[in-house]
Length: 411
Image (cartoon, rainbow, N blue to C red; front, side, top):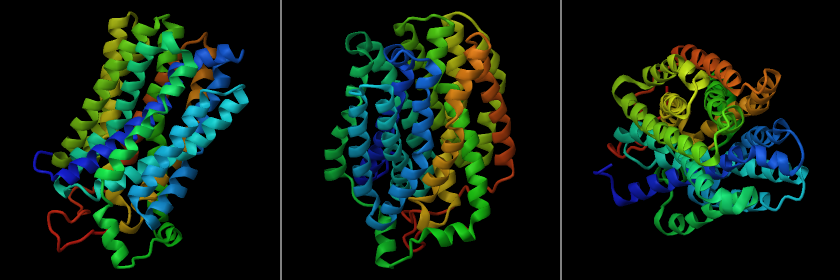
């Protein structure tokens, strides 16, 4: 990063911060599931529908905002995304009933669905090609960084502001807009494509690359089960199954989110040396021996160690995903297709929180068992699916190192 231009660093920060603050807003919910359930006099599994619905509608946002970003540019659409998801995070705090809360989370989910694809394409099309693995890990580290922020805010503020106040704090991402407006330029690859009047029609891309799309949706379904299956109910696991107080829950969450950030950056950078596929497979495979410590140990220290190692591996595998998806898809669909297949995978995985909570409730609130079943299964599936895919290391995108090459499209 030291030899990047100031513009490239600004774009990298804005993309990372957008995904961080989006994740921050999403993960506020996982810390207060039990509190919302108590407030509305219902079960945790009923409130977990909010997670499922938020994830389920994200493909709509990815398609809608991705298409707009292909037509009008990455920068203005990213700003629009931030405005909308901040607004509906704010409205979530004022929900009079569970039904209204679910409605607000659905609309929030649509806006959230657009951020990943738009922000990642802006970053990957601007930074130097030689740094794309590192940027992939840094960008994806925004997700656990958002979780980390939510953990810190929960530990510091929850006792004073309650669950509604947490959602009020969740409107703060709006403060990122001035930085993007004044400091972040449009993607040079998008500007060049506009000058050449390249077609951004999606249907021809889907028809000619349908096998790739199916492969990516299946891969992203497993990846989203991997992340959500190890994160969404973990605070509930700590509070309900182990009886930890909010301060202890916050400390453990802070530790495993630091691990997640380190893992994403480590394996993202490693993928530049050993290849995208090997890096993802190694990280996913190493999650398996961590399962017993992560889900079935006792005591805050042992559980914290298990959580640290698990999220290092889970988000380590995820750290390669942004660059892998960007390198696999055609050049004229980078803002819409990676985000769309990612969110379709999220749609499939949107049942995770409800599924795990039902399994846990059927086994005496054993959330550890429910999470271990999901995490272990998808870790194996990720290894198998990635092994059958194509290596993309070395694909040129930005043309920043060789202006004559332009944005190369995968053959």
